Length: 437
Ligand code: ZN
Image (cartoon, rainbow, N blue to C red):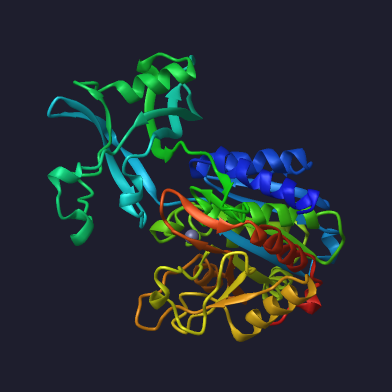
């Protein structure tokens, strides 16, 4: 492993640990962008004319666009990499703590398609964002994070569930997922916890958006450390790769705006103000075009020349369940980035955008794998089809291979990390006349 690859892996493990919620993921991204000299743009201010350089826009706290502008008079296209900041998890209900059978428990909602069994018997911390009134009565928002084992969803003992290993585990989301946090009644426990962390009175607290996360740290694993064991690889691993590619490509010149755009709410359908189904990205692109002093016609031409790479993790072949995979499309861990194709357009890859990605992999000397879902199983989706529908531009759906998708503890391949960053970097550096449309 080169020093550079080692540093990249360490940074990925740090990013995964720093980001237990989409809000924290955006904050971790912003920290890296600031260090690299990127400047913040506020959506609520006029941007005037933008000069060349790196910028970022935080949208609603959990979505982010970061981009590098070349000489504005030369902009011919946008090269976009899209990913998502959210992962399936357990989220606290607004009136969370309640008492049952003498225990204090948290009311939780299951967010997205979580593998519920993976949340059992874990040491769970709590993180999220809190709205409170400051000394002048103005609303303020802060991120909070409690890296302590505060909660546990205890599994029923086998002596009370004798057939669980033969019949399988069925969990009721409402009644069997609330974690235990203590004994007796403590209806104000979360409020007090957050107030204490922020150094304000409990009376100043207005609202919170808190979620549970596994306290096990991301790590390399396996006999040769060939794997990554971590929460939220789907899809923070692709958020991280997109940011690294943007930073790696930011030094070189070109005629395209290079952008990494990270959306929230992909795991629940993307239909929200911070999701890929919102107007955030189209509005942003148009505002940039205005800031480059382009006419409406020039904006539409620029948009027509643009391309999107939608990056979301892919299913690697599971050795214990080979029958769940399409026999001729079996990506493996550490086998390189995966190109995803689906005739029902659950993935946005077209024949041209797929060919472009294959060429990019060849140029970057990175192996490429292909994924097609079994035709007799319902295929998942990504932000790819949504952004390509909104913008009407060619999009390619790709991702690194992984196992245990949507488990609280997922598994990826170490070698794939640098490969994806290398291909993404090449994509961002492409000149506008070299993309396939
Ligand atoms: Zn995903």
